[in-house]
Length: 331
Image (cartoon, rainbow, N blue to C red):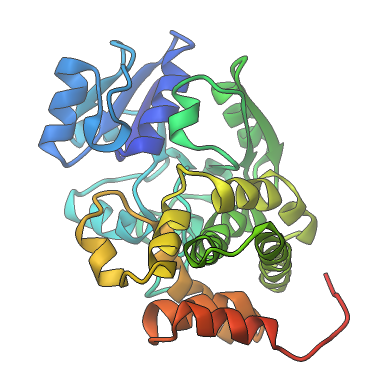
């Protein structure tokens, strides 16, 4: 098949490598960035997003939208907040296309998940949509470190197809029909990861982070269930699995943003020197809006929101969380 990625960031490039290893697909990375396309096409590297990792020569890169229109499967790997604008600006037509999202986030202005954005602006049908998500850093996948993820689609046949498409000896894919849970797990864990980074920046210990991860997962599951997800999904790869790796890894941009904030930097300072997008910053805004809309208590999300956008200091936020009224543990 011809498989085109809408976006040539680190994660999209890593997944292109997974597909190229099978040596049976035409794999194309589409990007609007001329320098990125040229580096991939001529030097087989993506230094802007993936360092000096050598890419398979069979992976092509292009800025030509026709590469998307002629694809059998389109992989959406653009940061969530830019999907709608990219589709509109470049006239990308995904009508009747089979689409797999590997983006993690919720659109701030609309509170839409990626599946909803693509249905709204491109008419992508539920039966033609899948999300691929889970604990998976690009830096490890390109080095073929064993990784396990989840493919979720309302169409179990398409979920199986995506599972077969991406499975390799080092990249194992499970399947599910819970699109809502899979998308929310991948998005909300980035907010909790920012808070985990803040704890790292403050010099807190393992006890503190373990509490944060556990209670953060409870918040994610509460909101997910209210929005129609299966709460059990959050105990799996797209919930607990992704949360653990993102809250602890040196590769996590969201954790790193939180760590820098915990050390005293401002969000504006951090954004100035970052080319790669930390999805959790925007998702914090979306998560707060969703929590308010569905009337779900999410104290960690609320604390992160106050630190990022309302001027609350990291130390004050931590103190507020730990001095909340005592209560029974509820999942």
